[in-house]
Amino acid sequence: MSEVIKKTILAGLGLISLTREKAEEIAKDLIRRGELAETEEAKFVKDLLEKAEKSRGELEKKLEKTVETVLTKLNIPTRKEFEELKARVEEIASQKK
Image (cartoon, rainbow, N blue to C red; front, side, top):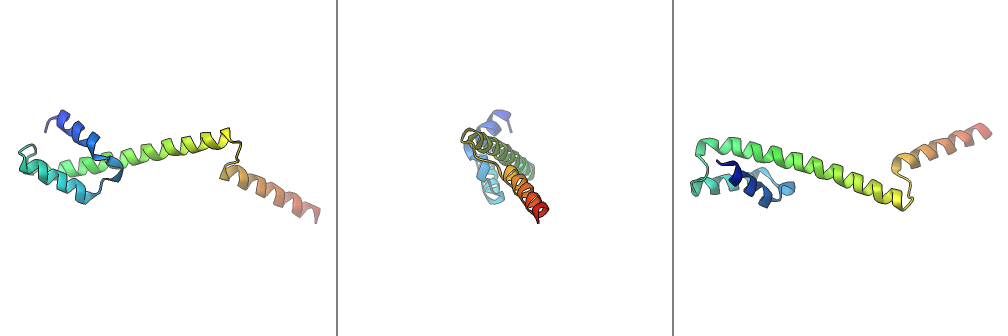
């Protein structure tokens, strides 16, 4: 299948929420339309799912970075900073006993 068709399909899929069933459905539709050979179906589905997983990972990283930026701008401590402060307070409290 041509790369242009693949890229167009991938762009329109919403790879973030792609399931195996949906990928197989897309592959079968492409086979019916003559745009994908039956022998390529398994590889096509596998490639779609791999790209979906990669997209999910990239989105997670971007979201984490965005949340971190917002927390910093709002001067709100992160979970890690909170846990470090909690540990320090507990250490100081135990020293006073």
